[in-house]
Length: 583
Ligand code: GTP
Ligand code: MN
Ligand code: MN
Image (cartoon, rainbow, N blue to C red; front, side, top):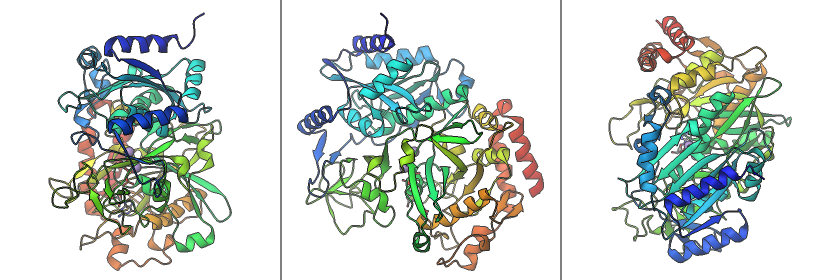
């Protein structure tokens, strides 16, 4: 009798013939299996046990110093036709790409164990979820995938039922930056990643599957796979609205997803519920509203800057059962990073050397924690709901020191898609190169869209159909600066004031003024009780700099032109219409 697992078994055999591992281990996701893997990694130095009194069940992993971040220049989308990948992706012809990377995989697992990891992105019983299987030679990847996805026996059972899954092949290879590729074959639902153990490159369920492959699949199936957090805002009456928000990397998704309401709001009974902090899959439901799930089961968050002040929910989440990657450690073996602000001090840096501030920071700036979402105090039970949560508002945002006000609302869906397509973030003084240079990162998907952005914008526009009850679209900027170079908006918990205004707009009770760029609140339309804003702050956070926006729209026109005739006319028309109104 043929089983729906035949295809999986054949592929595993095929990969084993190519990579020639010493052993093959099918992962069931059990505690016993995890404990054995941890022991193995402690023995070979892949993991170090942290202080078991302060951080029970937690470990430190130090990566190869050349392998600490996603490698966009080595990341390819391999579609049959080059134009399908678009100017927003590196492209290679599928045949050529397979040949090139298979040569690297040839015999690469000799002396190692090959792990087969069935996983499900999203709740096991959700129709919105999708499964995958990652084959890897890294036990560190297995341990992380166990936290970040629903991994093991239940996922395998679903694959056996559905028959479909995304194939992901990964090897850490020799960790040689010159022998490293992250390749995506969206037409074959296949990922091949060689030469890196870093999360975004190696945990194939995350960016590779849940964004690049899923965005491509979502386009043909009528849904969206987005680089968005999902949160619930519960008002004092106990009603909850759900919001999805796309900000580029390091622009505050994890922070906003775990927001703690400011004093007055807390007393009144406002609560924030976390559904997800990085990825959102959503599709129209039977009632015409968009329903969203978080395909992930854990957080892979940036450690530096995480403190009891900036993100208490994140800090509370990572007190136990957490894998830390590339952080420093204190004398009594607790994890430490810049900005943890807990009165302790590092003695060892992320490379395992004695800490010397003159040599390198204690924690790598992209050091991360991996932890189950269930450990987050604000984690919502609705995150496990197979139907997903109905989205009331979609928020786009970036780091814009100048021009862009605190918040504005798009007039309609088409305008909202333009607002997302126009998203940008400015480089900071911390980065090399010019300061304040604005880079376009449409919908925060520049590194993650698995197909041509022109087609992606058209797909977004296509949701505007009869009967659709689409979310309202907003744009925020927590990062507007004053003439003194300081942030004008307090941010963090106080961002709830902006979210509350959005909810009032959704419900029809919030006030706003129509301007060429969209609906702007007057300072008085937002609850600013307890916030002191200078006159400059009020002007810049709530005002419209017409000349600045004229230049912005001229620049946007040039940017959109790069996508050529494939770009939907409706988007160009919208850009032109607003540019004309501003003139
Ligand atoms: P990825 O996980 O890489 O996709 O990024 P992310 O969007 O989750 O970024 P994260 O939340 O880790 O970004 C944190 C950075 O944003 C830190 O530098 C924070 O200080 C800063 N940040 C977050 N929220 C605010 C805010 O409201 N105001 C200001 N000024 N900074 C903020
Ligand atoms: Mn994050
Ligand atoms: Mn991200």
